[in-house]
Length: 167
Image (cartoon, rainbow, N blue to C red; front, side, top):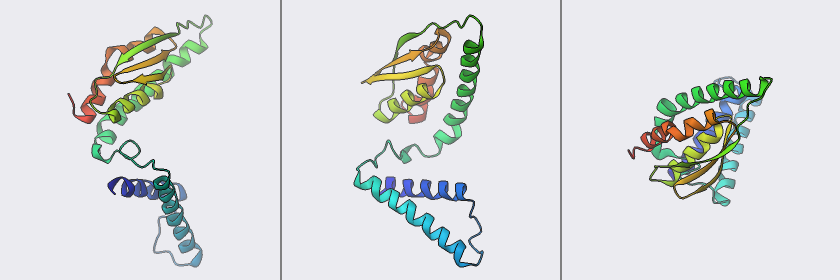
């Protein structure tokens, strides 16, 4: 039940932010009609997700609490920006020094959710893509060795372990 409620709240918050209808006290049929339509569309999406049986701890990781937003996501955003700059330098350089390679990264997370967060974080950073994940091994395609160094160093792995509080 907590996963369903968390998805509904996330959808409602997202709808409110994107719609810009914050003044609930505004009078008028038009305003209330839009608010009701937004609520109904969010409820319909949650109902659809429940029918598809895709509401679980991976889709709505409420057990992590606010830790991802406070500790992990700001660091990940910084890494994405740094990786974007590195990939841009590679692409714009006249010699285009690509050293494409497949790298195997060991995931030390104890839960499947932690391994999925690690694989998605690797993919989110430009220049690296998680290709295959089996148990605690993640195959990563990297554009250059410098891009793969971060994945090999284990910094991202340690941060995800701290996120799920396993290490």
